[in-house]
Length: 222
Image (cartoon, rainbow, N blue to C red):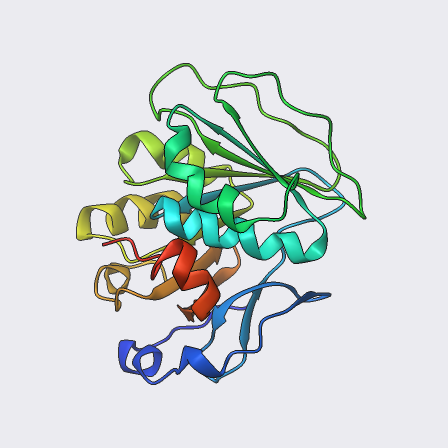
């Protein structure tokens, strides 16, 4: 993932309405980049994958909903099952399971049926046992980013970020230390999604189709 140092006005120029939604070799499309191309994120690999999503539960639900097109099974571990009702209602029957945060993890995914486990456990309780294996991705949801999440971010394979406040941008910059992680992340428009790892940063406008908007709203953080 090459580093892309993007001015805010370039993000503003993107029109997400024209985005072709797909899931394929390039990954799951979550938005549209500043050049009008799909912002695709490879969520599943032939190895355990850890992702941290700093943003709203609705953004996490939108992300999970998009993975269903690849045949994924989605499991949500949470102490607030009512929050995930929109995802359960929008998904085909049997494709999304909402379970207690401390429930034993399910078996690993497989290439034709990858597993997306959303970790929505209370942030500072005893960490739950999480699945690990090939074609298995754990997305840990955090609605706020503090110094207590720094280690979590450091060990993630990928970080998905909705616009941050200044203190959160400082925590992220300290944890990742890559070009593009700086105070600009606190000045981005509300519908921008940042994709970051240790190789660099990409930005794009979060896209929501009319059908998805009916279930998840605009999926913004604030």
